[in-house]
Amino acid sequence: MRKFVLAAAIVAAVMASGSAMAQSPIVIKFSHVVANDTPKGKGALKFKELAEKYTNGKVKVEVYPNSTLYKDKEEIEALQLGSVQMLAPSTAKFAPLGVKEFEALDLPWLFKDDATYDAAMKGAVGKYLFKKLEAKGITGLAYWDNGFHMVSANRPLIHPADFQGLKVRISGSKIADRYFRDLGAIPQIMAFSEVYQALQTGVVDSCENTPSNYLTQKFYEVQKDITVSYHAHLQYAVIVNTKFWNGLPPDIRKELDKAMAEATDYTNSIAATENKDDLEAIKKSGKTTLHYLTDAQKVEWQKAMRPTYKWAKGRVGQEVLDLIAKELHVQM
Image (cartoon, rainbow, N blue to C red; front, side, top):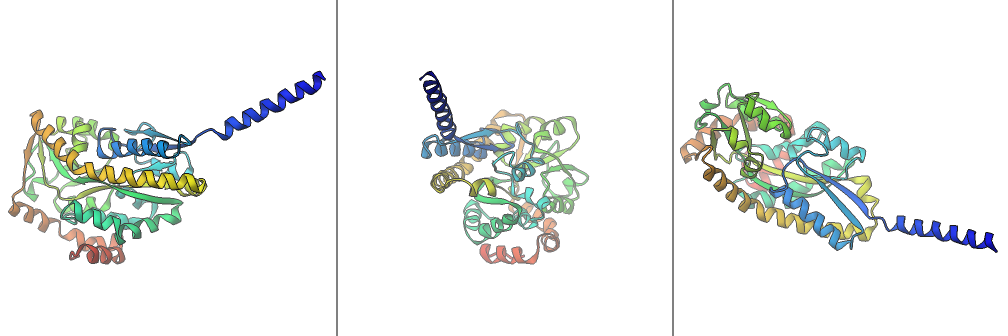
């Protein structure tokens, strides 16, 4: 009888253990390189909130901001290996994978406003680019907006000649590399987490980024002059490991799709407001001087950067340029 009771107890314990394991939440590690208090950072936290809510706790989203898990040079490989499940890198980061078409989005003066960008990414352009990631074991879920780039240095950057010999940090886009070279600058590829110290110590003289990143990363503290040029756009692609994503139960994936759609609407809706407010905060700090280009000065920049479009054909291919030209009604 004792043996029977002991055996029953063991079976019950094993079943309880198995039940507990079965009820363990699915963990999604969401890594990114910016601060929580940015459009992307807030978007990631919103997705966490909604994903956990809609799945009734069956999914747990762990958000790792500010390169605490991986630097931007490492994170896509980590995603492919399954060490992290979700990322939101800038679209310039896909070229090293062999998907250079994404760099077409970095062309200067391409999007006239946020609405133009939004329509392109929700339409044929965005779908075309995500299709290119499938062979790499990556599934694209959404595009997140972070507005337009400013550029800074410890001297005013008003005319193309002002860039001569300037060491400018770029994220890795060959398109950005090209248009800064067209201005006479010397582009330097550098991880986002290293930019502040590099600016502070003079390893680089300059960088480009959006107001929200200038504020939260405190770049404005180590750059005396910022030109509110809005010469190029910064966007992120929210991506997931395909094997992991396809392996999720369909009902769970459905709720996560819903959470991502709502988080995307939220992120994109706050991007313009956040950048406007953050630009005002930078201005109020008194630590840097903001410069605004006149229409004539913008034309100077556009003319100086125009060779980038011709050069881009050999980099990103005619197919994506033709699609963008058609969808955005722009001349390549």
